[in-house]
Image (tube, rainbow, N blue to C red):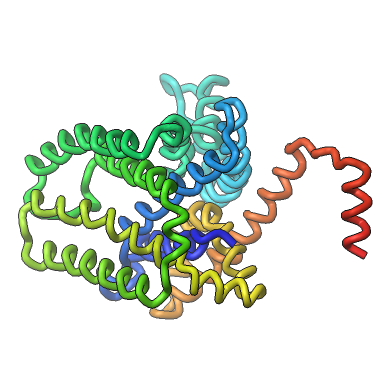
Length: 347
């Protein structure tokens, strides 16, 4: 199993939980979407860069593979959750009061393909192009790309400091988050250079380090809100994200933890499966966070039920998307001797 599966599960839980903050008696219990999203982007950069390092690909090979990984789930999710369950099939934008073939085509293109209803998909399809380029660079130049990305970050941060008086990250503008997430993606690409070092980490030591960073990260966020400090102080949180992601990656990659899971294949299989459906969880929870019947249940039952429903629905979406991939993906021809060996091994 991959050493990022546990982190993907953690990221999916944090993102879903943050979208349910108004389902809790105290919205502060709905933490921590910022950390979850940042983990998703960093792991995307890390995993994609590792894949490119193991098997270099041209852009013509690389990008269609990314499309095939994402879009079956995106299209099926949009059809079910956006068009059918949310009724958007019956709400086509008009042009001068008229529905035209162009407005219909554009509406379906926007919802099914790009930019899609899902922010992660919108951004990662742009980031993939950058990953393909930056993954070919030496580690020092990757750091330079991260530093260069701080130029637009600094510009948007200055605007935020001018427009907001206290630190409320949920209110920050779109392009600020785009540039910030890009930095985490490239940070993940940079970390892919140090996978051999990650294999030597030990579980308890890395657990202590990860816990320390989480306490420091969450403690800083809580302090900023409690003291109503001005927005410029909030930049500390964004810089703390880097060591927090690094500490969590070291923990998930520790030899002791992976060894434990490898000795228990059933547990490892469960972790690998749910680590593989996190895209579908991200898509599915986007609909169920607005499900009024579930929200009317008593607390904490509604939280347990919505997580369970999201998990089951995500699994179904994942299986359906995999079925689509098998239909459209060209089958590889197996040489005769290999085919005999496979059959013999199976018997």
